[in-house]
Image (cartoon, rainbow, N blue to C red; front, side, top):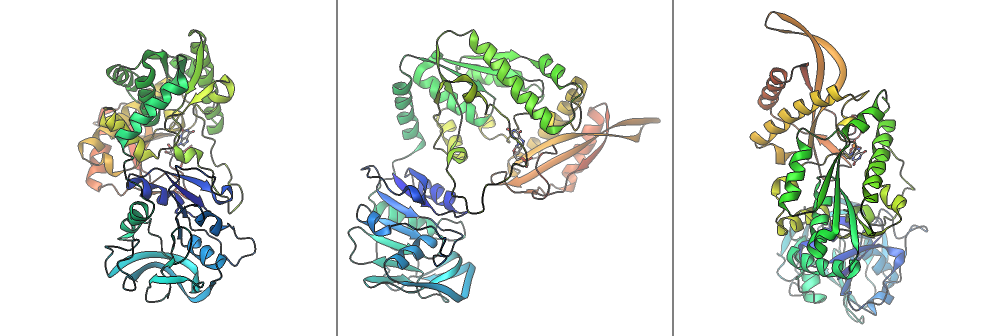
Length: 509
Ligand code: XMP
């Protein structure tokens, strides 16, 4: 595997994804964890950082010590730190570079790192400091118009040591992936044999060892992560995996039955628990978003625990945790504030005191989907939009009642169906309807109506942290609006949400 030491760059996860796209497994660690001796580690990549290496507070690392053990590639800050550590000169230059630059690969085009990279190619720069003088025994591999050292190599180190001033991991560095691939294959000797199939094989083997003859209980949500995790565990231990899927009354239309059918098709041993009425009773009269979240999260744990009591000798708790949830981030701006508390099954591990089984702990979302395809899970489930744990409860503004849920389920179903039919479903990251606590006057035939308003939301995003409202075609919006008002009795007005995140959030509550 490859180790990526993180200095707090916003691009660190992109390095990891780019490495994995070369079918090489990698992990991210905060820089201060350093590199523990491990024969499985074939190379180290040092990430970028918002700091300047000349800042007294800047993160530091004994690069030479790592180069004693294995090959190292420094990216941006990682390259500057390397140059400085070995005695080079890094300074604020009068030509800061942000954005596109043209890399000139003419100094040593046959070098293992830049092999087969075009003589000139576009790269992405984002730095205020520049390497003005390389240390003794280092040579320049590539330049750009404005900087003399865009790529360098150390000549006499125990293992190979490279630095890149630009970001090979971002999309706009056109041949960046080729450079990373060169580092991984030509220099670190990786084979590129980490694939969804090999992951499934190794993980199932590992799960068998971890679980032995014990039983595993797991909450399923119908979402991608829990379904893929459960399928892997099921492959390892069969029906000793006990899945629980709770109908909390705020799922989408027909979702409970459809998801149970899919689980059955996959051969999973899952019990569906209809707890709708319990949830409606507890939610009655509650209007605060945070309170609604807490009620749903808490009640879910109660229902799950009650079900767990019926199963003898449970030894472990399965979870669909994925890598972005566990990467230890290097904090550069202090702790971030909680905007919304996201209660899912998050409270379960603390309550149940069970050993955890988390087969997806090291995968990114897109990798989870690829593993899901490998396992034969239907595409429709794997590629569906994210859906919040508290479900439609946070899309019904104000009090949640069974009638309002039905109204919103119907409107949401029309919206989702239309998105699919128009081929727009996959082009947005998330979409849903919101029931507003607003009634307005309308006219249908000769009759005056006084009914609710539904807002449609659709966003484009990469990870949900930031999002732009999706510019859905007017014709499409006109069609959906018509269909909702005609098909859903109780709704006479449809509006479209044109706010981005920030400053708005994706959900309305
Ligand atoms: P916001 O509204 O914070 O949403 O912009 C970002 C993403 O998180 C989802 N979301 C939740 N997911 N429990 C969840 O599991 C929650 O309480 C929750 N609140 C928001 C939201 O659907 C979007 O994908």
